[in-house]
Amino acid sequence: MATTGPIAVLIATFLAAGVEAIEMVTIVVGVGATRGWRSTWIGSAAGFGVLAVVVLVGGVALKAIPIGPLRLVVGALLLTFGVQWFRKGVMRVALRGFAGIGGEVYDDDAAEWKEPGIDWTAFVLAFKGVTLEGLEIAILVVAFGLGADQLGASVIGALAALALFGAAGLLLRGSVQRVPRSVLQLVVGVMLTTFGTFWSLEGIGVDWPGSDAAILGLLAFYGLTAALYFTLERRRAFGLQPVA
Image (cartoon, rainbow, N blue to C red; front, side, top):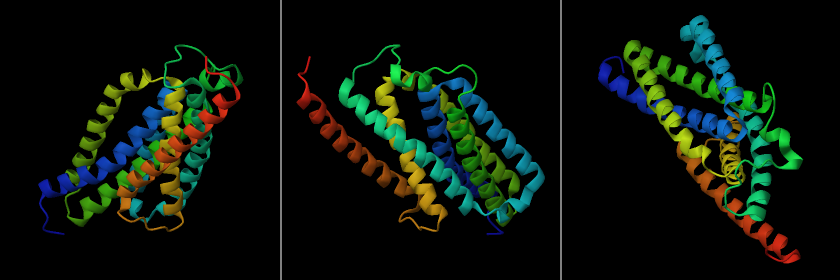
C-alpha cells in the first residue's frame, strides 16, 4: 500500500471512519433525546477530551491498543442499559400507544427524565460511546495513514467523516425530540441492545458475518422482537381491562 495516493487514502479513511462516526452519533443523539442533553454533551466532551490526550500521548502506539477488551466492557454496559430501556419502552408503548405524551413525567420513574445536576447514566453512555468509537477512528487513521505513508490525508478523511455525520446528527436532533418519549425509549433501547450485543460478542472474539453490516441484522432482529413483545403485552394489558 506504500504507493497508494492521498485521494485514495482520504476516501478509504472517510468511508471506514464514517461507519464508526454513525454509530457514535446514533448513541449520542439517542441518549441525549432520551435522558437529556446537558449531561450527554458533558459526557461527549469528556470522551473527546480523553481521546485527545490518548492521541497526543500515544500517537502511532495506538495500533498496539487491545480493542477487544474495551469493546467487551463498553458492549456489556450498553447491553445492560439497553435491555432495561427495551423492556420499559415495550411496556409503555403497549399501554400508551404511539400518541405523544407531551410534557408528562411518569411518577414511578420521574428521576429518569428530570434530574438536577449530572445524569450519570447519560454521561457514562455518551462518554463510553464517544471514547470507543473515537478510539477506533484514531486507530483507523494510524493504520491507513502509516500504511500508505499518507497520514495527513488519512486525518483529513476521518475529520471530514466526523464533521459530516456529526452535523447530520445535530440537524436530526430536533426531529428526534418530537418523538414521544415512550416510543423514543423503545427505539433507543433497541439500538443500545443492538450495539451492546455486537460489541460485547466482538470483544470476546466473535467474528460477525459481514462485519459491521451485522449490526443491521441485529437491529432487525431486536426490532421484530420488540414488535412481538409489544403485541403480547398489549393483548395482556387490554385483556384485563376495557379499552377506553
